[in-house]
Amino acid sequence: MIEVKNLTKYYGKKMALDRVSFSVKDGEVLGLLGLNGAGKSTTMNILTGYIGATEGTVTVNGYDIMLEPMKAKSTIGYLPEQPPLYLDMKVREYLEFVCSLKKVRNKDVHIEEICRQVGITAVSNRLIKNLSKGYKQRVGLAQALAGNPKVLILDEPTAGLDPSQIIEIRTLIKELGKERTIIVSSHILPEIKEMCSRVVVLHQGKLIADDTPENLSRTITSPHQVTAWIKGSSEAVIQAVSAMAVPCHVKLLAEKETDVYEYELTGPEDQDIREAVFRTFAKADLPILSMKGNDFTLEEIFLKLIHQSPEKGGGKDAGNIRPGN
Ligand SMILES: Nc1ncnc2c1ncn2[C@@H]1O[C@H](COP(=O)(O)OP(=O)(O)OP(=O)(O)O)[C@@H](O)[C@H]1O
Image (cartoon, rainbow, N blue to C red; front, top):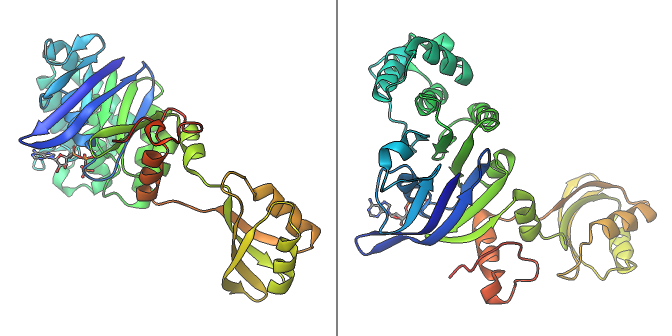
């Protein structure tokens, strides 16, 4: 269990965190989502006792990180944004060193176990500097797992990896999350959705949402507007739309294939038009070859979350969204 209360951090005059509070239950995988500079690393550095907070408290498994740092830290494994690797060491040598620092008993068996867990047994005799970035990240995860901590804190573990390495690391984190409490940061919403059971969204040092990924998606998707590829003449499409039960505006975007056009369909803000769109074009014998809700960039999502916060009058459907400023 991790409790974060009113965490505030100033770097000189620069405020990096502003009264951030949240908690993480045992066995939960919590995602910290935010743009660059949102305060994710600062939060993680405070949680792991790397830096102190200006105000506020953090307790990890009942130990206050400032008052009982040794006890609190002994329950945490940390993978910072830049993994703390000694490049001229071999993987095994490095893990032996980490295990000595953490006073791990039965080192050999333990190292074999964590190498197996993160899939680095085959490279355990290689110099770290000769490993790919994906494997270096795995070694970083292995050092976090040394000592079998109950809590893992992982700062942007997939940053800079190629797509197949990203999938491998995400799968690994999901696997590790079955037995541990994990906090993982990212600036990629789909990544957080895939790995986490809860998401805390930070923006400019403030907590602006704390919810499940599903509720968050519901809050930020916009089913009143869809983009669809429809086969048939544009005249027939326009005619079908004019007969729709829900009033809709249609905009032709592009010709995608012969006789297939891409349209943007927009209904009233508070209405989900997807089903009506499907029925309309099925009835008119105009096949929909693809349909998707309009995606938002992360920046747009943040603006939406801030706009929908209760303080700004958007509280009705805003889930657990908290004020943004
Ligand atoms: N040591 C420092 N001294 C001064 N300002 C800092 C320091 N570390 C971070 N900051 C500032 O605090 C704010 C939060 O930074 P932080 O690194 O926590 O954000 P982040 O969400 O982790 O971003 P990123 O994804 O870029 O790592 C930023 O404005 C950053 O410039």
